[in-house]
Every structure is written in C-alpha cells, then in structure tokens.
Length: 457
Image (cartoon, rainbow, N blue to C red; front, side, top):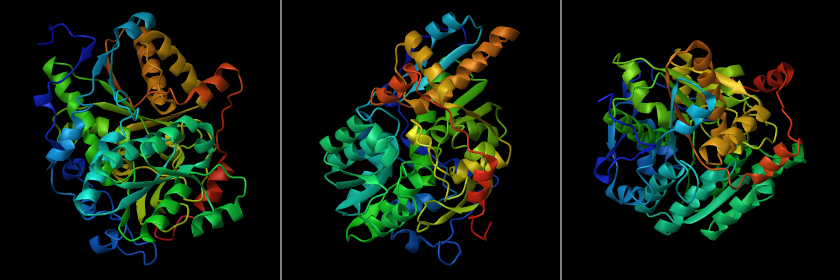
C-alpha cells in the first residue's frame, strides 16, 4: 500500500464520509474538569446550562463517556454540500523547499464560509431548530465563525445575532457583509446594546475588543430574549466533538494510502481546529496504539498555552459564563488587535488544556510578521491564499520541513489549513507595506491579568 501513487488531492467517496463524531473525552484517562457556576463556584448542572445552550448540545457538552455520537441525517445532508474536504499532498512546496519531508494539509476552506467553522455551525443551528427556538446569538473574532453560523441559520430559518470583535469589525468589512447577506445582524463589540458592553466601554473606551468581551455580550443578549440560546464556535466540548469530522476524514484518507504522519501541526486559539484535526490521532495515542508528535501553534500576542496558567477562569470578560479549568491568560486580558482575530482568545479548550497539561502534545508561539512571511511563501508556491489563523500552522510546518532538509530525515508532516484569507487583504497590505508590527505581552501585563483569576484556582 505504501508504494501506491499518491495524488495531489485525496478525496474520500461520499459513502466513506464519517457517520459519527468522535468524542475524544471517552478515551482520556484524566477527564476535563467540570464547568463551575460563575456565582456559586459549584459544578454546574445540566438544567443551568440549558438556560444558555440548547438541550441536546448541553448533553454533548457534559458527556465524557460516549465514544461515538451519530451525526443526524439532516446534518449529513448539509455536510455533503462541501464535504469531504481534500487532503492535499504539497508536492510543489516539498520541491521548492528541497526537503525530503512529505507534507500534507487538510484544506477546510473550500466552502462559502471559507473555514472549518461550518462543521459545528450547522450542527448547533440544527439542534436549535429541532428545539423550536427562534434564533441564536454568538460572537465572532475574525468573522469565520459568524459567517459560518449565518449560513447555517439561513438554511434552517433561524434568526442570527452576531457580536463581532470591534477591531475585526473595522478591519474585515467584507466578511461582515457576507454575514449580513445571509441575514445575520452584526454588532461591533463591545457595544452599548448590552449592560456588560457598556461597562467594558466605560473602563476601556478605546478598546478594540476581544472574544471574551463579545462572548459576554452574546450570552447576555441570548438570556434576555425568549426563544433564543447562545452558541459558540470554539473552546466548548461540543465544538470539539463536531470538529472531529476533520480528523476522521483525514485519517481515513491517509489510511487508504498507508500514510502515517510523524508530526501533526494545528493553529490554536480556542482549540476548534486543532482539536478537530488531531482527534482520532490523539485517540490512538491515548489508547497506546500509536505515537505522534503533535504541535499547537499560537500567536505570540495571545499565548495561552505557552505562557498561560492552568486554572479555573471565566470564559468571558463580563464573567457571566461558566468557569472552565483551562490554560488561560486571565479573563481580563485583552490581546493586541492583530489580524489573526480567530486566535485572540484568552483561554484554551478544557479538553486540549488537560491533554497539554498531561504532556500529550507540545505548543509554540510565533510572531505576526513571521506568520505572514509563511503565508506569502505558501500562497506563491501552493496557490492558496491562507487565512492568518491557518498561517500559524504553515509557519511551523515550513520550519519542520527545513529541519528535515538539514538532517536528511524523511518525516511525514500533516497540518490543518483551516481557511482562506481573501477577506484578510488589509492585513496582507500592511505586511507588504512594511507597516505590520509584532506585539508580545510583557510578563507584568500577564501578571496583572492573572491577579484576577477566581479563587477556585
């Protein structure tokens, strides 16, 4: 099988698409710590979560035991519009780098939303519709999640209210207009439409906002409207579950050609892309069936894994959401308004945080200009303009391939290309004009944010 000629793009047949999501928690020896009530500090109950999330999504959020969750037929029907997505052998990149490494990437940007976010958006919209809700509220950073959710809500006939991080709202007007095209209302966050938004603006009048701020506003808006629930595009266990379709497809495609990755690389902000890509591979690692080197790549401006603390923290700046035990920079941390808006979250998925704490994968941080250097190089060689978020993984994949050139090792590298960057051209303009800068928070800045961690830590 290893001698079988490998095409540029490997597509599964429609009949080979995953029919179930994989729940990585079922194979974890150390489960993620329970969510805590923001007021009492006690483990939050299902009926309390259901005030914020849809009922079936709450069940998925709390399920640590079920290994495989069947994907409803209505969701499978939607997936078939754009899935399976291709696994690409980067022959051109290998040749240009002069490396003996074999490089593969799973490309999730071929749907209209431009990213992997649609995998969970359609699932969450489906469960909201099934519950008979009128609509949902959410936040979005760079706009990929908001775009994906607006598409899914339009398909199921739901109202969609999006709070978009203000810096991204101003930088990425075209993505905002795609959301509006699909019928969503889009509000820059922090805003004066919510109590928590007004408080944040009073304390930080010139802030560009953060995902933590936008989450607070979206949750407040959801609980104040009958027939609405809040949905989230990353971090949560339920999102990791839905995104496992990425890794399941990737592994099935690789297995057909006898390909075994040595290194698996994913961009990490809240964890949806990384968690989805590595899910079945990490499952094998947890079960002792095979070992992989797994690398999470995060921005140096928002380094939750590499410089954060493993502690209970609020998931939002307004401190109205449940507390999660995760690697965090503190809910008060507002990152610099860099262009990888989807990675500007102060915390990391509790699942990934626990796995990282257990030493099951490694993490590195990279600066913004290094990321765009890699993005431009990749675009010129492979012909795809990557999103800034995706380019974090590209940066480290290039570095690992160059190491192989130096050592002569024929390693197989897999990374996730989460989406395209055609709505990020303002960022590329800044890079090309030499106006892009790198911001790395000082230890003192992080210490001030850590001081606000809840006492449960």
